[in-house]
Image 1: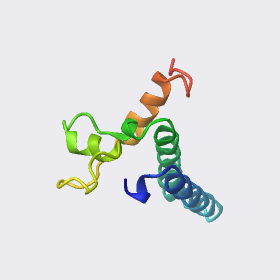
Image 2: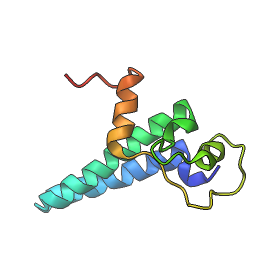
Image 3: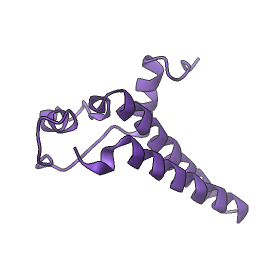
Length: 105
């Protein structure tokens, strides 16, 4: 599997985006703050998902079985259509379903 899809890579990405968000906030750039904060949270959610099981990153809507095989380590080359993972909302939803995050009341 690609190193960019590892727990460590997602964690470093989350940390970098969070630092950018804090820098943006300090400069009063609130739109950029929200953007970078969202990226940080998405990458952190994906780090948790991949730490549980890399298959949890698969975008189900596209029916891309190659991506599932790639994330599980059974396909050595990247899928022809590129690497696609779940978005922030789906990642958060999966973490809620797993009980990692509280349900949204």
